Image 1 (spheres, rainbow, N blue to C red):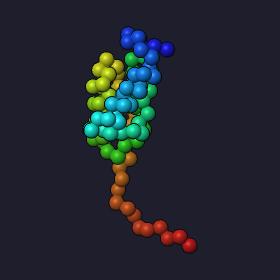
Image 2: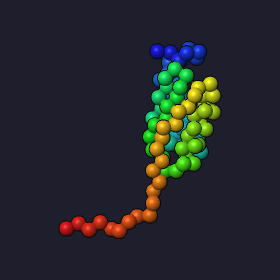
Image 3: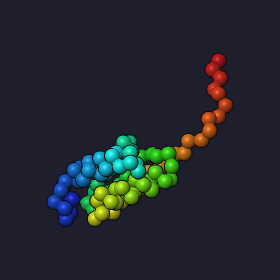
Image 4: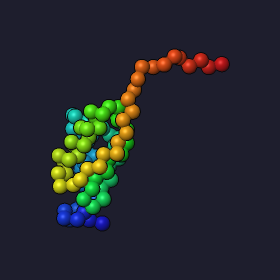
Length: 88
């Protein structure tokens, strides 16, 4: 199925966005899933901060400015380690 208006298959658009997310120094994210449906891009996965999530949105929107980006990425902030686990 081709992306309306672009004449390009959604898989190619998604691959281009994934590459931009991996190569852009603001994001350098490899584990983000990118799905393109029509004029919409869906980002899924997890990142370590809200700032990183926002940068993913910016990079995707800059790469494909005619598409609407839906950022469904979860933020999982790493905290200080707790007490050591005791194995018996």
